[in-house]
Structures are given as C-alpha cells and as structure tokens.
Length: 221
Image 1 (cartoon, one colour):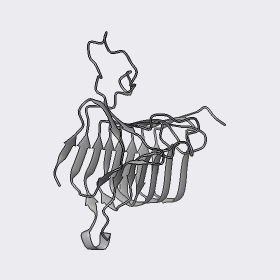
Image 2 (cartoon, helix red, strand yellow):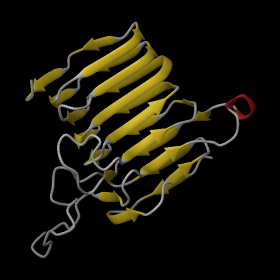
Image 3 (spheres, helix red, strand yellow):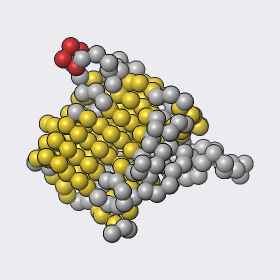
Image 4 (cartoon, helix red, strand yellow):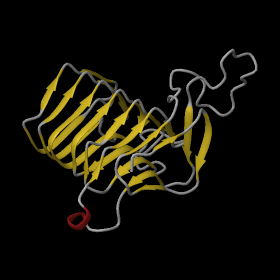
C-alpha cells in the first residue's frame, strides 16, 4: 500500500493477468500515445526526433484474458474495501479484433471485481478490446480523460452507489455494445464526454444521475 508502479515508455506484453489485491496503489505510465504512431509495433522510428512519444504500451496477449484484475480473494466483510486504486497514463491494447468487437477476442482491459472506494482511471488508452473497463461495486469512482476506442463496451459499472464521475472521455464503441452501461447505480455524474460510433448509453435501476454537456455522434442506426 502506498506504492507507485511505473511503466516506462515502450512495448510490454502481458502473458498472464495482473492481480491487484492491495489498496492505495497507483499503476502509471508516461501516456497512452494514442494521438501518434507510438502504439504500433511496426512503425519505422528512424526519422523521429522523439521516439515512442509518451507511450507506455501494454498488450494483452491471450484471447479471453483480463489485463488487470482488481480482486482480493478474502471476504470483503473481513478485510473491508480496497481504497484508492489508480490506473493512469498508459495504453491497454487487445492487439487485433474486428467490428463490432463483441464477442471478438473476449479480452478485458481492466476488471474490478472487488468492492472499492475512490477508484480512479485517468488518462488511459484502450483499444481492440471486447470490454475496456468493467467495474462492480465502486463508490466515489472517477473515470476521466480516457481515450477508449474500437472496443465492444467502453465503460460498464454495476452495483455502484454514493457518488461517482464519468467525465471528459472519448468513448468509441461499435453497434453491438455500449459506450456507457450503468446498473444498480446512484448519484453518478456523466458530463463532458464525446460518444462516437454506437454512441449508446444504457441504464438499469439507476437513480439521481446527472447527464449533461455530452456529445453524441452515432454512425450506426
């Protein structure tokens, strides 16, 4: 607890799932590199002044694999919740998949299975994943400034309550999935997001949500 795991710029391949089972942990890189050629393996960098600009690029190697799993095996009633887990400024790449990405390669970027407080996912890039971010039972979550592109489902939140924010993200999903899916959620603020392609929100048993100032550009009927 209290540690920062730093992922330097470069290409990294996950052969197994990273299991996060402690709180007060930050996993961060130097940027997702989405707005450059940096996340591509086959690019000739010889003429670049800055090679791999801002790209901490993590590839998920195996189909149906989870990249990062937040889960503590013991009972939440005994050990409480995981607090202040942070994912920040790196790219999670499913490597390849075809529209509509569901079921696709079955890969999930970040899955939060255990109860959490103050979960933060900030400045991340997600691409070619069946599910970019799947979270259950998170309170006071903050999902902001992420670039989630060409994924089946972008943000899925279930059984979350108290307060939470989904703000200032690019969410690009195809027609088979959702840009934002909420179930059994209370008091969520959804604002400043750009939803493209499928541009779909789906809510089930959601109360007192605030949805304002978002841009929807739907390319599919």
